[in-house]
Image 1 (tube, one colour):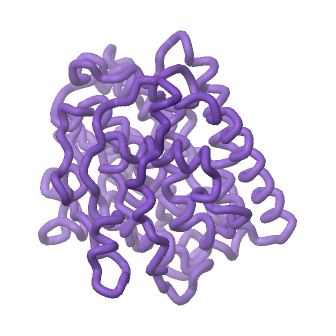
Image 2: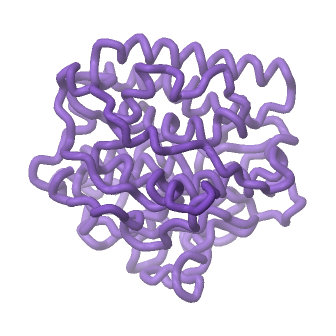
Length: 386
């Protein structure tokens, strides 16, 4: 992996599903562009690294930085999962943006007075502006902000999680997993490259396609790769080696959104995730592992995709389904061996238990607000178990 950061783009070099351009609601970078303009993924602008040797001027330091995410965003969710698995909650604080961003920026309307309580800003774009006045590009998550200065450090989601695994080791919890083990890095990189190109990015290529041929090519790529991954996972619990790695995190954040949004909203409808016994079991295994399911908020996910992508879903109607109860059913993947990362945790806001508790089977509530961790029900999560 070269660590190059990229954002989704609807016909321009700024903005995208998890990034906002500076233009007005009807501008070329606005949410209405999705589904109307050709899709391509552009490189991000801020790729500084936070490292043990401070090579870019940003040393690893407990309590100094703030991770800004949207629980709707699959790219940001990678950082959420890594942070939990590695036990970095106390070292790296968390800000959660509203899943419904506007064309100014990701906004902190889930917090009191609409301001992040640590950074004191209403929009993530303010941290971008503090780093580079007049920044012309998109405002994307995940992003890491230097708390003392209020300046953006990085929005390089590809490199961020690798650095959490390899550069922040002095702050890892005791017994933290090695998510990017050096002897397996070549194999991990190879697996991640195919998953990124055809699955992580492939669903967006299909969803934002503006021509039939373009859509069908992306559609074929998605399901061809999923078939290969399913074959790989038929006799092994995890993608590489005998424990969870970065490769599993990157695949999971797409799989967990598949039936809820990508199958219908992005027209990736050859089959559902729940119709592939291997991938469905694998995804449930990870979901029930602390650090995975307890970072997922299906309510945020569904509202973001269906209300923000107005070029695809002009009515803004959010589907009431699908039934999420299957995520908590036994997966039996432990029979394949491998080393899990703890016991099953509680159910996060917006997941099956909350959805099923709504009278009449309607959509879940508004989910957790800002702050550290999704709101828990039915017992919560033991941080020491991950």
